[in-house]
Image (cartoon, rainbow, N blue to C red; front, side, top):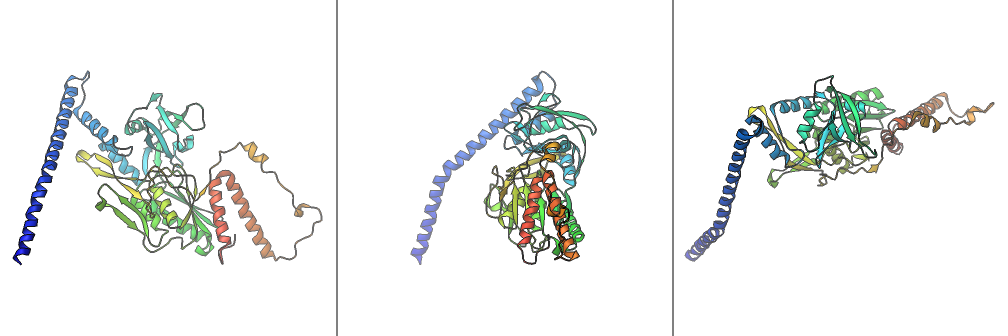
Length: 446
């Protein structure tokens, strides 16, 4: 027993000696690092004092400090930044769904301001701004080299005022100007409607109202059609949706999933990762879902598309999404300001990160450029049929109800054909739902 104790004690002592021998250099290195940090902070203080006292014009110390903080954050990635008290308040207003501006979501790419997406029915959308556009000038002033927040500040202004932005667009040889009148942006998070027996849920943003609007809109459309049994499926339109609140993306995904992971987040510390799971209940009651995405679908939109795709709950149609796979945490600071800091990456249920890669559709469908009205007329000539011939025989093998049903089905098909001219991707999604419904036992008539 004594030998065992002694052996244990000797081992402990040896361990202490070994640890001391290893820890010595580590402690010295840590002390050296701290000294280096303090030297850098002293350098910052020297520069700050020189600027404050010797710069050609008088500057406010508070402005210098805010600029230094913002520079520190924006050097990390395009989505980390300092929010002044006014910016922080504006961000809180935006999440509630109403604010003043142009109606575009922007990011920064290699020093250029890039449009993630225009927001539906806003001045930018109506003026023709497109996802992927690069903004180079505001009212003739170059914004190249400015931080994203500074560039956005130039685009802000009183409601009703006019702004001219210069745009570089892929496929266009020269930059061109677009004039926009600023307005109050009222975000309608979800617009619900029916196309035939398909419910279309157009989700424009993920703010506090997104899930309640989606749930209410879906239920109203189901009731209007005549019950869930009459519905052939749901189109979840996330095109040009720049994202928003992570909590809302989780709720929207959960609305159509009964179980399993929705999304997980992983930061620098593996132990601080989070996983969010679905709860029982499917608002669509198992009906087929098609999710529409494009290059303007970002962040929260990609969480929803990725979750439904990985669980094979939806067919994803359109073009590759934006590829913003990081999570920002807004941290309040003293003085009513805030810090927006990238704290983690998110991962879809299959474990894939979509950062910089985006969500790839199951079926790639490009949205064709709109053609002139004259071209549309030429491509839709009216064709003659047997029924147009003089003296043609009647069809006496069908009842009046059966003939009426055939005519109703034809009218629905013609409505979809007309929709194809207006929105090819949406029409494609509805055609998929019709096809799935036709092969489903006891599916609703089309």
